[in-house]
Length: 97
Image (cartoon, rainbow, N blue to C red; front, side):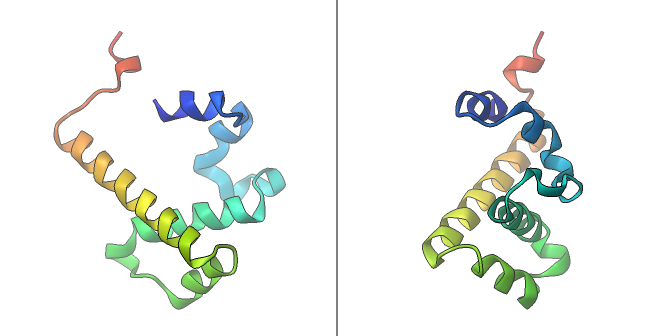
């Protein structure tokens, strides 16, 4: 679902397939994209690792307060949606073939 929208919005297939290994993709992702992906991983693992000050400061170096708030809310919502989908055994429409 989200991948189709991203591709329609101009994201390259290369970036899409490498997002899960973004930290190994070299300069494919911009510094700001890398900061967003790093922040997403940090927020997603908050129960295990808390939010280290260094990670927070690194994110703040790339985003305004509003951008960081918006990004954190989006990450939290996606985490909640994923937990609901997993709990209720939801299957994406494309997988129902």
